[in-house]
Length: 98
Image 1 (cartoon, rainbow, N blue to C red):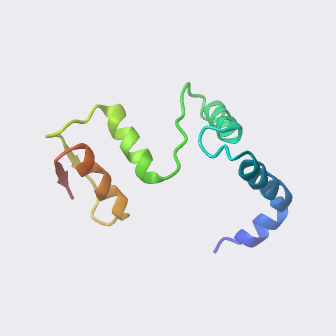
Image 2 (image 1 turned 45 degrees about the vertical axis):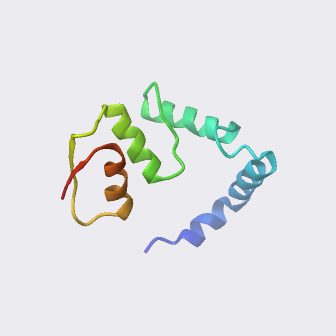
């Protein structure tokens, strides 16, 4: 398995400082750390736009909105997946296929 503790120990000071900076600024949504992450990811992926999301459910909804899905559209997904994969589509459309 992955040694997460060992990896964390190598960057512990940097991680703890970043967490403390966010908590002290109370800028949890679109604050400077999020904006910096967005810009770094856009540069890394060589794309014009990235939308940082707080969770996968938000990411699914935003991606479906970007595709222009509407009521009556069908979404087909795998049957072995996280519950949010099946939860978000009915909010956007009314046909979900497994």
